[in-house]
Structures are given as C-alpha cells and as structure tokens.
Image (tube, rainbow, N blue to C red):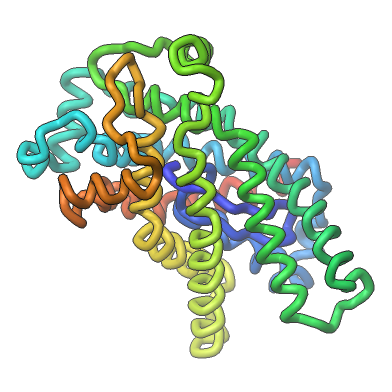
Length: 343
C-alpha cells in the first residue's frame, strides 16, 4: 500500500509485494525472488551472496529511489483518491491527469510533485527491517507449530509457511510504521494552503488535535488489504512466470521477472484499489480542522462512497497508479542489482 500495503519478505527469501503501497508500490520488487533463487547457481560466481544488513540496505535504498522517481504519479493518485471527500461530485468529471498536473505546476510549483516524499523515504528502511525480522520470527513459529523444523520435502506446507508468514510480517510492519504513512498522506494531499508544515509539525499537530490514536486512522483498511494483496500478487506472479518459462524457456530470466512483476502489480492494484482509496480517505478524516465526512466505520465508508460517487468513485486515481508500475519495477531492479555489487 503507497498507496498500497507492500508485503515484502526481504533477504532473498521471498519478494512478495503488492502495490498498496506502501511501501514498494504495485509489485515493484516481485522479481527479486526468482533472480536470487532460479539464477542462484549461475550468478553465484559473479555476485557472491550478501549479508542480511546489506540486503536490507539494498532493498530499502532501491525501494526509496524508485518511490522518489515515481513520486509525481503517486501524488497524483492520492489527490484523485481524496477528491470526493470535500468536493462537489458533479465537478469531478472535469478532472484529468494532465489538467491536475498542470494545476500543480502553475499553483504549487514543480517541486510540489514530491510533497511528502521525504516521509516515504524515511518509511522505507524501518518497514523493510521490521518486515524482514518479523517474517523470520513468524516462519520459525509456524514451522514449530506445524512440526516442519526439519522437513524440507513438503513443498506445499513450506509454501503455506512462506505465505502466512509473509502476510503476518506485512501486517506487523505496516502497523509499526503506519504513522509515517498517514503523515505522508496528510502532506501529499495538501494543495495551496499549507496546514501541515513538515514531518514533525504534522506529527505534533495530529497528536494535539486528534490524539495519539489519530496517527492510526485507516489502519483497519490497511490491514484488510494485506491478505488480498499478497494472494493476488503471489498467484499472478507465479502463474505468469511459470507459463512464460514453459512456453519460452530460453527467454531472459530478468525479462520474465520484470514482466511478471509488472502484471502482478497491475492485477493487485486493480482488485485492491478500492480498499486503498478508503484507507486514504480515512487517513484524512478530521485533517486540517475539517469536520469528519465518514462516521460509520470502514464498511460504512465503502457504502457512503458508492452511494455518493458510484462504483467508479472507488477507482478514482487508478490510471496514475497503473502508470507507475512498470517504471517502478525497472528502477528497483536496476538499483538493487547495482547496490548488491557495491555493498
């Protein structure tokens, strides 16, 4: 969820990401697993395995760099997602990506495309670290519960451990770093008037006006999206990669991984985007001293949006989200591979 909760299992064990955000958007790092597992024997002589700290640094830095490069599209996504909260719904049909981008440049300046990006970068490394270590702990716990400590032949059980452990790790990491995600949304959603002036001012203002729990508005929607994101991302990625390699076994592993990661990111974005939109709107409830719009909880918010804006309102901002998937995947791949050689 960065619009997406990203469920990333670091360290070459498994790269399962969704586009929610967060996080690495829209499947931006799903290619890491096959690159490290399938091509391990051929690459080992060229790039020796790197340690856990180096893997976390390479993954965190590459994710932050990709988010910085795609930040303009990410901000456009957020602005479109929250348009229906305080605007006349009939006026929203006049908006478009190019019109909104032109408005940002003319009214806020070119640098405004990167509003809130510093928080995104600050979010990346702690999220990756918590996700990685939580996954290792959950994996050991699940293997102990299922009696799989010394079992290496049960592939389906092992896959289940990876899947459940990855989901639990994603939820843990999202919860631990959620205030940073909320602050990013508050900063990025601001237009001409600047109610929040920087990261620490935003933290302080939210705690003063909304209480400490105000930093966790929308967490329920975030956690709700983790399971579907992981399931869709993983199943589409594995299906596309397996089919591709079966039909064209001589194609480059890199190309197959990039294409599979992009398609799985688009698929997960399409299915889980409504949850992400609800999350963003709940994050902005009561922001800048405004009155609350949605007062009936998570599912009440879904009903309110569909009733007032129609089903299409649940997909407001999906196009810029799509546009950033492929470049995000490519940037992360190139940056990660470069950092592996340098670290």
